[in-house]
Image (cartoon, rainbow, N blue to C red):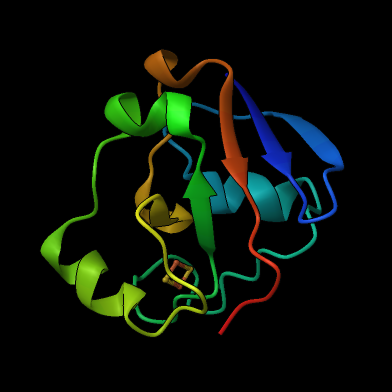
Length: 105
Ligand code: FES
């Protein structure tokens, strides 16, 4: 499943993600800068914060309540904010575009 990470300066990093992995794991495995994933995907650090591209909002869906609480700790939270460790890669996400925030935490 192809996932593109767009850096704050507009540079795009294209990755081939494994279904069942999370978007955060995909970023780490591919060395995408700006996504840290300090807690390893337990939804307790908010350093895997991303903005889901507008065209993908519906397919990806919104955050769970637990994720929403954790997002309060992320930097510059917007409507499109998600914690990437809480997004599981699946076929419907083929071509997904997420934007990496300027900083984490
Ligand atoms: Fe820590 Fe996502 S990796 S909240």
